[in-house]
Amino acid sequence: MKTFFTLLLTFLICGFANAQLEKGTWITSLHGSGNYLSKSEYKLTRLTLTPAIMRLIDNNLALGINLSTSFGSDRIPIVSNPYSVNKTQTYSLEAGPVIRKYFGDGRFKPYGELGIGWHYVSVREQENDRPIYKDHNDYLYARPVIGLSYWITEQISVDINTGLNAVFNLEPDYLYKDWNLNIGIAVKLGKKNDE
Image (cartoon, rainbow, N blue to C red; front, side):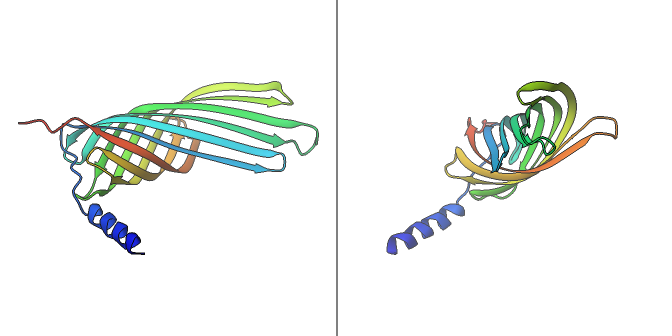
């Protein structure tokens, strides 16, 4: 019990220590999310990875490039024919600029982020392993995010964030939105430039 309280006290003290995000340094990050659902013959799988590299253009303000790739697979039985299965595979790629603003001076740093850019999606559909549909399209995306970083050391943080991914084109007939929860890690590179 004494060990538990010692660890808790150490954790709390470290939580109030400073994590400096100075102008001129770089942050690389990798966030990911995934889910799997299986019920009877129905199966759904999703995996998303989002690497980014950002340069701190001011203290606690970073600007960079975001890349996101995701893969989805659905297996859905066809109700009208119990021996048929519809399989859909989706692959998407997103790339564009991202801006992130950190708040506070402690090891726990909340942040807000906005990414925009190009979204490519490829969809392939099969019925009983027979191709019935294949398509790919280009769209635009916007991704506002709120998150929290815990800086374990001056260089490494563990992040959790949630955000809305909105995919659209310039016509009003297509808009895809989804909320996601991501967990990741970030690494700060370089030192503050002497001015």
